[in-house]
Image (tube, rainbow, N blue to C red; front, side, top):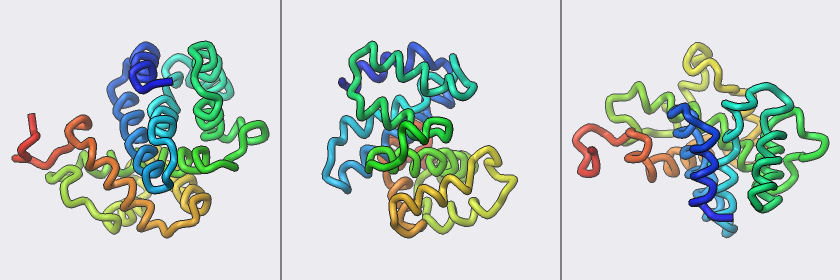
Length: 193
């Protein structure tokens, strides 16, 4: 179980750059929360990176996640990572409930990372200076990033038992840490390529 192997699997099964970026976003948020919780950043990060790696090949429920779980188990990935991936979708809840910190957190950051990324794309400053209140305002605009489940974001906040603004701030901070990888640095940044 290592990040290099996870990256290889992600790229083997996922060709869509947007899905790869989403995996990177969720990985960053998971690592951030693992650090805050004093737990295994590598394990949590890999769970985030790989949570949707099988989506292109198996987009329909219940194959999405279940087929991926077979691939990860065959590759020797930790069952905690496999269980987290399985738990983030509704069709596996009976067998893989969101009853552990890694599972709760993966569910909580998944949709929110998508919304933050979408919001950053339409800002001239990208992720630079992005604040929680801007994302919360975007959440209220149903037409903006309409595919992002606001209901799941709220359920995730309940699972983590923290205020929405704090959760959003944590995820923004995590994504700002990989802004260069996401091509979301503010214009004129030193690290801009």
